[in-house]
Length: 155
Image (cartoon, rainbow, N blue to C red; front, side, top):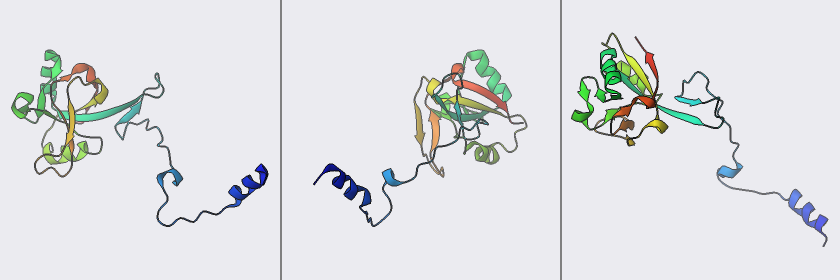
């Protein structure tokens, strides 16, 4: 038996598999870069390969002004502080619009803080608490100003 005979047998062999294809055999698709930032992730064009994973926090302009003066954000949720709650409520890109509708529908002035997870110097825990329908990100400590990479006025 020569080597070309072995190769011929391998190339022409048929493989029959029952059940779904294994991960290695599935076609994998790459996610296109989302330049609009709709999915909460962003690629820094100046540092290829660096993906910024974002979480989001809702606050009002007056509370944000207090945070800017203090040099860190400690507002947990509407009218509640980090010292009272023990963590700061945040959302993913998919969650924050629902949170706005559910808890901030009557608020006239509202800001959306874009927070880069990699720039937090306190624990971030994704957890499901109480009657929440799904896990949410919670920041267990003050959010440093450096971690807030964008402040978007929603209304």
